[in-house]
Image (cartoon, rainbow, N blue to C red):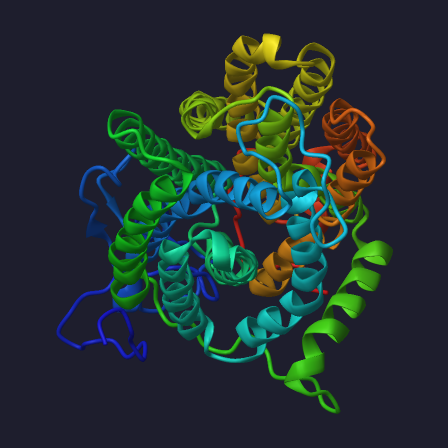
Length: 511
């Protein structure tokens, strides 16, 4: 199959060299006395990257191009949740005996809760489920050679589950809820595998910041294009919520099949087993044991990484639960229909592009830690301000301005967060560390939706739930203050790191 190799060089071909144990962009590597020369397999050869996936250099490795294709596709997968979530809310209201277009919130209950608690209950349940089973996915990635196979499997699963959502209707709405939750797990499984490639793309900190910013921009451009097309067609053809979902799912299934399929079949390479299953352990339990052992050793040996993980517990919980809380809030409090919700999300996505550029600029001018801290403060302030100013349907015109501010904040947050994390983790354990990254982000995912649902079921204003998101970002910011100097954090895992952000030697610290 294209994209796979056993690493045996062709004797008739002159291959570039890279430092031992590094899977990097060959263009960025120079040989030297600290480098063990070895051939670069075909999967890491430089290749011409076609537009629109070429944001900077026209050449890169297939792994970088595959990651770009994967990132561009993830946008439509994420944004389809906007239309699906809105439709499920309306279906739950009808099942509870309420009208979806009523001016007042539905006070009838369905299965023991208000329809307005549906999306937050879903993300709360998914968060607990994902946190339980993600270590198993991480163990497969870390202790087997099936990383690429898991990426392909999750791609096929995403295509099937999103195809099933095309058949959404009133009499099977509860089954569609279950399909949507399974789709969230499949997406997270895919994220674990794809993020495991990120630290291997280049050892250069500045180049890595550029890659993460570029991938983020591609994801948000894909998201914006998806929102723009679905919203425009829905408005011009006067689609209702269910017809809009069917349109969105046709686009999602098509883009996932083409872009993710190309990425994982032809470009993202097979990786060998990173480490054997520890003696006396099973693969089913190895992930959980490793997370416990790794977390213990991080908390005793790597102080900066410890505080980074504490930050991720709260910041990722707020960021990942924001879409469902925002959809519920704008539906119940501001009365936005599916097209107005799509416009808000379109503005958010469009403004995330300059946010990603800001992340790269600040990361390269100062460092990723400063960039990350500023993004957390921005999101904290916008959440608290929105909770104060958006109180009724009379304030709906203001939500578009907040959508722009949220877009800058999230576009800034994710690339700086990932760049900071991958530069302070122990090397040669990238897949394990990225698995821990995903697990940490899911561990408290249930908490913001739980608070929001509890406030809603107690008939407190939903504004309090939005304000809670701001406080989660503030707690995350407070933990970053305990990390110490960024250069010291990097040196703790790689003493050969220089002040320009380039790894000079591969003799790195491992747990």
